[in-house]
Image 1 (tube, rainbow, N blue to C red):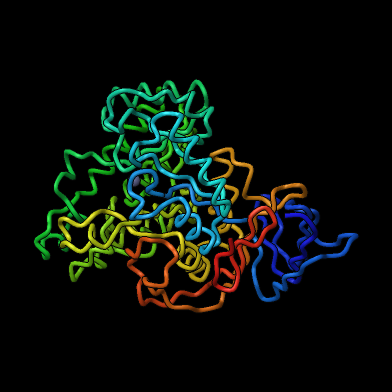
Image 2: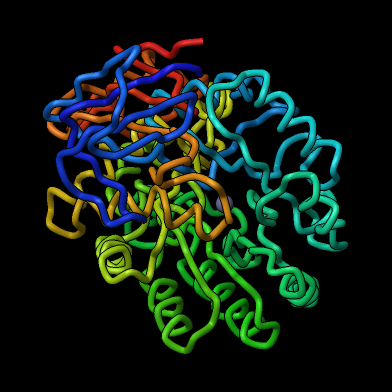
Length: 429
Ligand SMILES: [Zn+2]
């Protein structure tokens, strides 16, 4: 974008720079020109009175489904859903078809995302070829091709020996290894959290030990390898406690929480609700409160959605056979704002978990509004209310547990490099 854009009268929150005040934001030629006073005139203005202006949100856990399953989502529809949710940078997981286990696919995704040109798309490379947990990928080559971290997400890196090698190799290049922590021998055949609800519904459960045992194993391997290890979508009290202890010990262990794991419990699946089925599953109130405490005390640095769009055919077949996953990009912000309304986090701390914290973890040039930075900006009204309508969602995936629910907090504008890509409820371009 060339020219000058002024976002005026907004409540500017830029956690990385410690800014939390009413201030104007000036953008020139796609970059942040100034915060506050600026000696110039604006070609275009946005009045952000009563709204919060912050760095464009980052979602480090998204399934874009392209290549391979474009009927569920593609790079264009996923990018459109992102900016509709105020998200300007996404990391996409490697469980596509083919997998992101070689450089060509990573380059193809980046090229397609640039063509779509709505948000920044950063691939996450596979740790093992075909995500089968056996043979390591060429991680260095994937990194050179633009992969910002490594994971077999969708699948765990299940083999302890392979995980050890992956952590040791990653450690020598300071790569981040992201684990979908699930011991499949414990969770096989399970659809929801194992407990009284799975018993009541007569549906096979996934015991919480499936998640906890793999986190415990991985922390031991991380200690030995001195690697950077990140637990994806943490959902259990045991997991949060282990990550807290590992960090206190000085290990380079980090984690993220998905909005559904701090907003919902396993009770959501009562009535055989397939749109409340994901992996890891919604767990107990005790687990939910532990995830909230982890967010509050900083054990959990990042909020990420695990946006997992599916076609209706993959979902409407009963709780046991329905695909795992829900969409999340368009509800990430309002659901997370509940943490501020409940007094768990300040607005600035919440925004940090969706901007500068993931940027720092992944070494992305994003998530801040410093002078000269790319002007990726999200503007939202924290008090505006709206009702989730699955049919009105921008994503191709309509699998949301929040259909018909009222949300408080609405994105009004999303800017990528100073260009308005979402405004007045419409994706532009
Ligand atoms: Zn996962």
